[in-house]
Length: 268
Image (tube, rainbow, N blue to C red; front, side, top):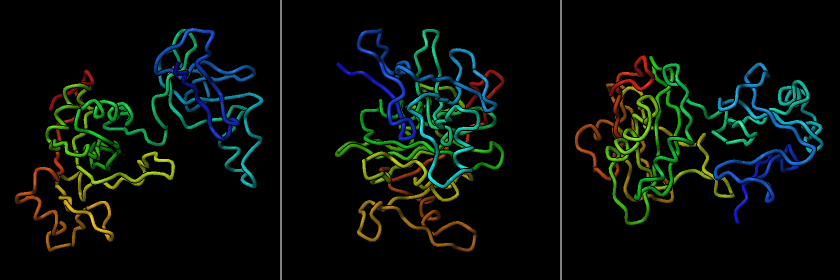
């Protein structure tokens, strides 16, 4: 039996749980433990309606007193007696919470919210994908564009075009990654958690260039990424070469699309 729960170091460390003597909902972090209150709030601290996404706020005996010698950080995290977790979630009508993503990882593309975790979960459905990290890439008109770094399973083959099309068929048009590139590995913590903030997007990705990976990582370049050297047109030499004929297995591709339409789905 698997019982999912949730907590942080600041909540000592458990806050909610799928209680064994109650209904269990797959994918949910359950309901608060005894003596703990949890809410889903908007940026102003007001409750959001059931089913809508907001930030988890927690109050109870388990919440820390504060960050050691960091009064400003404590005040920001606990502005009104409720600890702001930085995790985005929704709550159903039965009071069960469902994590959506980290607040700081939210991508806003043309005014639409894109949650990296949702796109990553679709990528993981592809049989060739071992790891994926979805990040926001600065864009001159959309604000941010969606990009995805992917590591393939040993012996598996898939092109960036194939992976992008796979996701495009399964999510709203504004959510799928216009930029997909393959990596030898992704940066991780000591516990093996992927560090999205350290994932590097292809050079000038938002402007539609492509980047080739070196197929054989070296000790000096363990991620196997071709490091561009600037040339006269502002692009790196590696990017200029990639525009000629990059190896398909190590290619990053771009699909600029034309933004979301009025219905939120948009067109290619």
